[in-house]
Amino acid sequence: MAIVQSRASRWWNRAAIAAALALLVISMIPLYWIGSSAFKPRAAATTVPPTVFFTPEITPFIKLFTARVQQRGERDEAAYAQAPWWEKLVMDSGDRFIKDDKGNIEASGYVARFINSIVIAVSSTFFAVALGTMTAYGFSRFRMPGEGDWLFFILSTRMLPPVVVAIPMFLMYRAVGLVDTHGGLIILYTAFNLSFSVWLMKGFIDEIPKEYEEAALVDGYTRMEAFFKIVLPQATTGIAATAVFCFITAWNEYAFALIMTNKNAQTVPPYIPSQLGSGLTDWTVIGAGSLLFLIPVSIFTFLLRKHLLRGVTFGAIRK
Amino acid sequence: MSDLGIRNLFIIPTLVFLIVFNIFPLLYSLGYSFTDYRASMNDPVSFVGLQNYRELLADPAIWNNFTITAKYVLMSVTGQVVVGFGTALLLNRAIPAKGLLTTLMMLPMMMCMAVVGLFWQLLYNPSWGIINYVFGTEGMVWLSDPDVALWAIAITDIWMWSPFVMLLSLAGLSAIPPSLYEAAAIDRASRWFVFRRITLPLVSPLLLIAVIFRTMEAFKTFDIAYVMASMEETELVAIRLYKMAFNEWQTGRSCALAYLMLLAVLAITNVYVKYLNRIKER
Image (cartoon, rainbow over all chains, first blue to last red; front, side, top):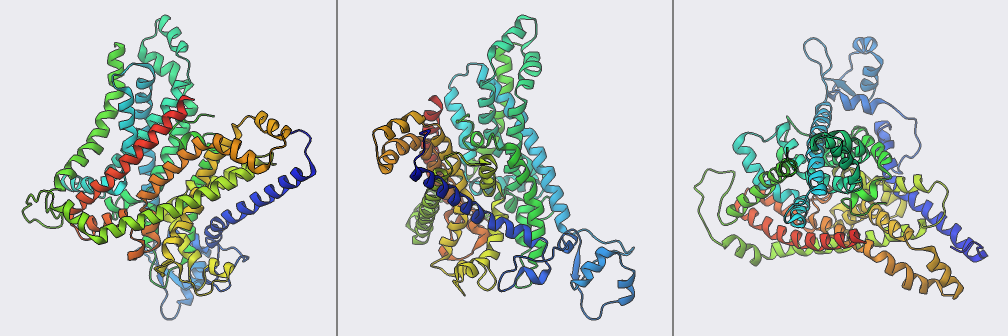
C-alpha cells in the first residue's frame, strides 16, 4: 500500500476495521450463548427477553456430572440441613440426586461419554499419526510406481461420506461383534484420519532437507536409525500439528458415533442431542456439557493458529 | 534393511488398512446394492439386478432429496463465499492484534457440528430464542416452518464455515505483491478497477479451492441438518440415506443410493485434487 495515505483511504481503513470488529462480535454471540447458558440459573436460560447479564452459578456443572431426578412432593428438610453445599444447590433447583444403597451419588451418563470421547480420540489420533508419518516418509523419500494415483486414492478415502461407509461397516461390525465397542470406533476414526495425516505429514517431511539423512547414512547410520534419529526430531512440529488436527476431527465426529454406538462406547456428540427432551429440557445442563466439550478444541485452535491454513488444505498451501 | 524394504514397510500397512476398512466395505455394499437385503430380518437374500437403481432413479421423492441438497449447497456455499471473502477483504490491512482477531473468527469452524447445531436450536427457539428477539421476528418458527427451515440450517452452516473461506482468501490476498497496487495508484485506477483486475484474478485460485471443498462438504451434510430439524423439506440426501439404512432397514436399496451419492462425491473430489495439485506446483 502507498506509504502516504490519503484522507479518504484512512477513512476507508477505519470503517473496514470497525466492520470487521462488528462481524467478530456477531460471530461470537452464539458461542457466548453456549458459554453463558452453562452458568445461568435454570429459569434464566429460557426467558423472554433473553437474559444477557446474570449472577453466574456453578449448579449446571454439578448437575452435569451427577445422576438426578426431579424432586416430587415435600423436600426432606433434615437431609437438606446435613447435605454438602453442592447437594444443596441441586436441591434448591428442585432436583435430588439418585443414590445407591450406600448413599453414594451416581455419576451421570455424560461422565462416561466424556471419558469415551477422550479414549477414542486419543487412540485413533495415535494410530493415524504413527501410520501417517511412516507412509508420508515413504512417499517423500522413495520412488513409488503410480505415486500420484496412490496419493489420490489415499485422499479420496477421506472424502467418502460417513453414512455411505457406515452402512457396510455396520453390517461387518455386527458380524464380528464390534458394534458399540471402543475398538470399533477407534478403527473407523483411524481410517478416516489416516489419509489426512499422510497428506499433511508429507508436506512437513518434504520440507526437511534430504541432505541431513544422507549425511547420517554416510556416517554409518542405517535408514531406520536415520528416520528415527534425524527425521522424526526434525518433524516434531509437523507431527504435533497433525496430531491436534486428527484429535479435533475424531473428537467432533458425529455420524459414525451415532450409527455405531448406543451406550457402552458412545461419545459426547451423539449423547448431548439425545438429552433433548420434549419441553422439560434443562438448557443450562446442555450448555455446561457443550461448553466443557468445546473448551479443548478452542485451546487447540489457538495452539494451531499458525498451521490452520495448511491443515484445511491437506498440506497443499504452506505458509 | 534395503531402501525398497523400508519403503514397503512404511507404505504398505497404510494402503492395506485403507483398503480393508474403506474399499472392501464399499465392494461389500456394491454387492448388496443389487439385492433386496434387509439387515433387520433373516429373510433369504435374493438378487434383483438393477432394480434398486431403477426404482431410486424413478422415485420423485429421491429426486426431491437431491433438489433440496442442491438448494442447500447453493445457499450455504454462496453465503460462505460472500461473508468469508468479504471479511477477508476487511481484514486485509494493518490491524492491531490481527492474529488474535482472525483466530477468534476461526473458532466456529473447529467446533463439533452436532453440538453447534443443537445449540442453535435454542437461538432459533420461537418463544425465547435470541434471534427472534434481536430481529423482531416475533413468533417465527424457524426450524419447523417448511419454507424457512432449510435457510435456517444454511445460516448456521454459513456462521460455521465462512471462516474457512476467509482463511483461504486472506492467504491469497496477502500474497498479492503490493507493487501491483502501487502501480495502480500511480495510474489513478478506480477502486473497482483494482478489485476487478488485480485482487480478484490473483485470489481466485485459492478461492476456487475453498468453493470446491465447501461444495463437497455441503453436499455430504448430515450432522447439522439431522440435529437441527426433522421434516421432509430439510431431508438432504445423506439424511435420506441414513433413514433408509438404519430406520427403515432397506439395506440393499440404501446401498444403491449410497453408490449414487458416492459417484457424485468422487467426481467433485477429482476436480478438487486437480486444483489442489495445481496450487501446490506454484
